Image (cartoon, rainbow, N blue to C red; front, side, top):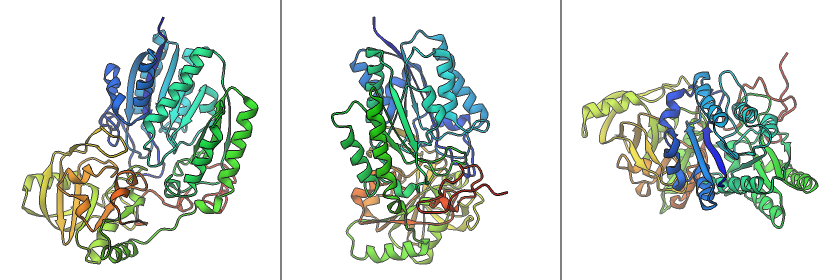
Length: 500
């Protein structure tokens, strides 16, 4: 008789310092993820670069019967509303209790905080475990930015995380989860697991796996697995979730407890021995633009500036205007910015039509100190319905819908404006409004690292700007209240101590 495996997904990365929460409609739209799907529609993700896609392909090849329930993801933001969490989590738990199943796979993020629950994934895994019992294996895949908790380890038989940032290996991570679950189904031999938490927070920009030290750490991890039954994971963590278990972790799962402990200890030492290398330097917006202009005079490819502190992939609203102001102040030409999310501006552009000049207050509506709308006259160059297909290495094949969009121009700067937010991870988001990114001298992108997957091949250089925004590039800058005592707020930085 064919084995039956229940599959579901619930993805959110929570920045507790961000200005906007994720409600149920955020998950329905999907934002930077595919739109919410149920039942057999989930199986259509088999060719999309998300974990459940790789899991589906791997299990179908093994002739496993899949029982798809719901898959939902929303762009990083502040807390998931209680209503959204309960509606989606209860749907998964109810299906797990109502179906005769041999195993469960959940496609999770690992850094979800709801209004009423600090550990969204831990709570969901615990509820699923309660209804399926201990005899049914439960495996979950996690994002590289997971803040992995004790509850997650206590409830799941195996957890496995991405190994690339940008996350070009999401599908293959799902395949590894499928291999682990298959092993549990076939051998009935329980896994051992062992994890260690890092003593310091790692800035998001330092976690890019194309550069050191992350590149070397993941190469060490892969080498340590060779000829071993242990599967290792390293999640540097999401350093903007204010709860006691925020931070990075290393762990291993497998059948040999002694081997797991030895390899995890080795991985832990590899990470902390390079603590000083996890620090990152940033540029002021005007310095970034000045350097981009200088480099562009001789470069044959665009100079890219990452507007990291308004990254919608980490909780920003993608509407701060600091970098736009710097581009205009320094009279940059052949420059493009995207995405600026402003539904009212997009609507005004559509009402006026292509070729019109409109006076609007663009962006700056998130209430960020040091930022505000930029009121000026903009020319409407091109309109779009905001729908495009991603062809870059991340989320390949996904159809994005950012709502009515427009290309506005002011001076030598073209701005891709959308109604809904998504991170600038695919060049087609520029092309959607008629901007050819390869033809520009300077590209300013609302992203921290994910843009590198599709933009690094066309870049002459990459600069990181620290303009006002809700996503602190240096976690030391955040007003923490609930971290674990003694956790260093940045590499070699001060330790967190509760204020009396």
